[in-house]
Image (cartoon, rainbow over all chains, first blue to last red):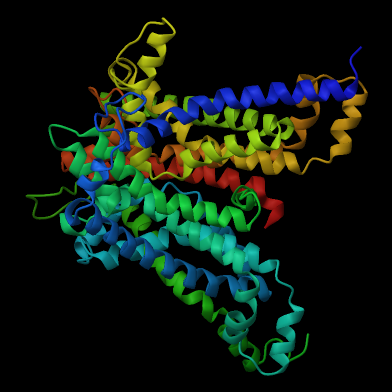
Length: 278
Length: 296
């Protein structure tokens, strides 16, 4: 008969071993991109680099390959995120603070919209954008990004706002502050982590999105990194794997840092999972 | 509640001013989300084409009739089904639950490390994930190198079993979501309950089956709905890895829709396919709402 403590230790070791096996499978593709980016002779297999070089980074750090697409990504996703967060914060306020017969239908519609497959409406969006001359424009793409991200952003924002006690605002109301003032001066500062989650989540989703800019933008000079990487590396005969890996690293780093930043502040970062759960 | 009584003009004004902050979001959603959906429902019944056509005309259910007689469409439906079942329902869901359950017992450093790796795969931009897994599954890629090292037969995965390759790619990329949902759910189970079962002598599997799973069944339902919907709209990952090929062997509905609408210029037909996808998505969405009904 084994003691409960030693049995628990055995369980823990078994769990650790199981997790590490899965992690090994997950880490292989990640290791490939990291190792290949500094490998002077990278190919498609994970291997110890033949020496360490920064030539791959050097080769892709040009305006054409990296700077212009990343700037475009920043404009698109920054604009889209700003619009999303402002609209979501404004919309969440009445939904969280005032009772109204319209709240429930509005929230249900929002929740319904969160789970619609956005991919499916891209063909009609394209056709519509052609008719109203928004096709191949940054602003059109920004508007669509914001609209597609809004349902989830409003839902998250409202849930975070519900966590801010009302009493603090009631004092401000009696002092004659308007809704907008109490939202901007009292509620939003108190839900800083919540706003950060909504902001980072929207930005990360847009930064990684391929299909929306792929459909709505046509001019190569306007393409964000998500599309340009594909055009540049996919459509030419010889692919330099080391450079492709280096570019992937550069393009992925901002969203990983942002995610880590938010996860730290929220202790574990499992808040997204929790928020999604409802 | 202080202030004027309901029904007075003052209160109507107040209700209106309170709803005012909803306006920007509502306008955006109506113009850029509801608008395209309505437009989708309209052009699905026309023969709209990309070029060389003076006017499109209403053709009723013709596009849908064409679709159900179109081998390529039926093939895409079948592949979408395989892709969803293998990658979402079996892959992401089961692996996510297993990871979350193991993490409950594992030591902290291992938990952090594994969580970090799995979540990184999820946060990576879709196209980058596509490239990484393209490299992984290529003939000269990592998977074959590992199989070779284990003295197992290798093959050119992206040609022989492209739908399985992209399904595994989607498992790699999407499992973190299920893992996060299930970790949150498992953390909410009171420790006393599992400990009581342990004292009663229930083994790991029985505890999982009879206690844990019933207690998190709502999370399971929610998770299944959400990952199904996410999987139905995967485009970039498959596009980068296989372009839907070879010979349509990994062409799921979103890729089929894209090809019909743009490469073959049949916007009307492509949109009809999109509408079917949207309807399937909406049905799942409604089920999802019912699952959450008590919480809104």
